[in-house]
Image (cartoon, rainbow, N blue to C red):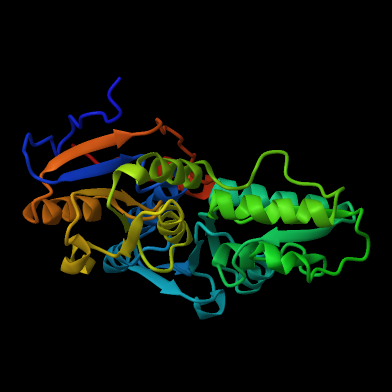
Length: 335
């Protein structure tokens, strides 16, 4: 069985003796990102601008700039939103404190939190209500972690590495539970969980792991081709956690890797002596940016393009009720 599937899609496959480009699949937008972007677009089309969005709807500058051009106004806090206006929470979720602040300002909230992030919030509330000290594995300054931490701040501690586990102080070592940020490296998280289990043998965890399916799939695809590629390029913004993790996964496999915002970020010196490049995209990077990189690399001699599909991905998330109701009540355009 051939290891690589030929791409029969819109970009085609070029039979050539040139250098090889392995285009990984799945890549790019996950279901939570598609849902969040759709929510902003539908809100703009249905209600008209301005529509305020707390934080970046997803961590990708191209997406944010595109939505800004359509009338979305991105703010850092709900206090910047005029009283009574509509505000959309980003896919990364918010703390109860933010929700309360929105109520005080009579804001009309549309929640674009990824359902998989909401799952972690629910787990945090459940463990806290049962009297557990909660260990949240993740990056302290990431929007998702800030939101989850806010569910039970008095009993939650954040750790980002196995070394930090030794510094934890808990009132009852037998009443400890852990949760994780959804966009972490599987390998890195595994090491932290192992350290937690050694320190707290009776520690509880989520019924199903918190790292999202898209993060797992994209990391597994990178591992699948790492040994066959001289270089891995990841399309994504530098503040995208899951995109940065893809770079780390490749480097941990011994493959040179770089995060690029777009095709203009590719440095010519990276390509020197390279025969095979693998290309993927973080879960918040649009496919149009990937296509631009493919064209650029073809111009650099990487015109033997093969798509590598490691596993199928067909997850879809429903829209929030505020958007569903708005669509249902919108007037039907006349022919």
